[in-house]
Image 1 (cartoon, rainbow, N blue to C red):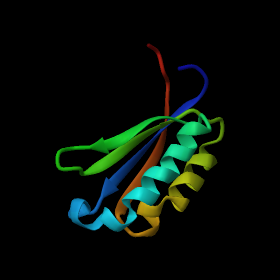
Image 2: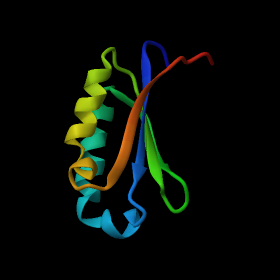
Image 3: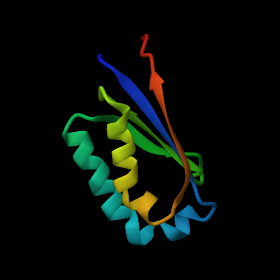
Image 4: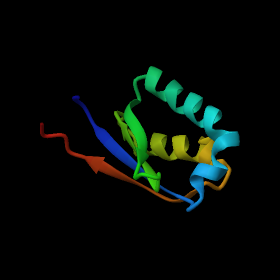
Length: 92
């Protein structure tokens, strides 16, 4: 992994497992599109049961990540209670 990286953190609603079903395919397809474009390096839920998610992006402009989040079906459905983007300095 070279180039600029940023991490997007999501916090989910407490009942995400019950509420995500109608939006899950659209959310995963949307994220896969960004992965195929080379903008997402890796992504996945955190916690068991899930309490949030983490996305690693390889993009120059963090505004692209904000656009990703704003258009994510999970965000649009109100399943994400908080989110933040942070630069990630990849050392190893």
